[in-house]
Length: 113
Ligand SMILES: [Zn+2]
Image (cartoon, rainbow, N blue to C red; front, side, top):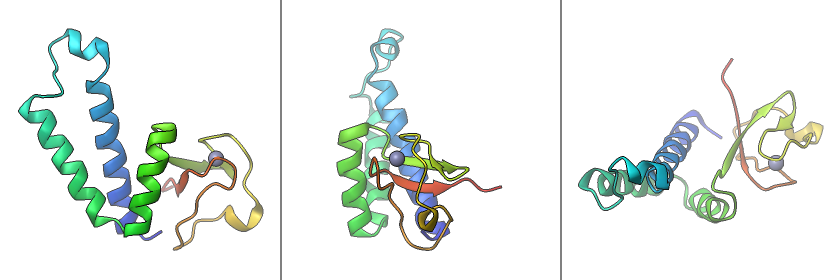
């Protein structure tokens, strides 16, 4: 995928993790509430980011997020780090295309060296 899409996707992923963390009981105990204005602002931000993604990618992301919570996974030495399966050689290099793992379906990204 392109750098801009990848950047938006990772930001969205980070925000979703933050929002999910705030829903954890441990956070609630120290006073975080998902109804707080700051939390609502995070949710607004993530929805804006979602709209910036190509529509099809946004839909895939939302479906995967419901299934796994972590919808995206980095590739390391030709392995998907979402499910720890080796990727077929033709998928194992970074490309402009949006690549999903053939095993778990997560959207794959390559860490910048
Ligand atoms: Zn996978």
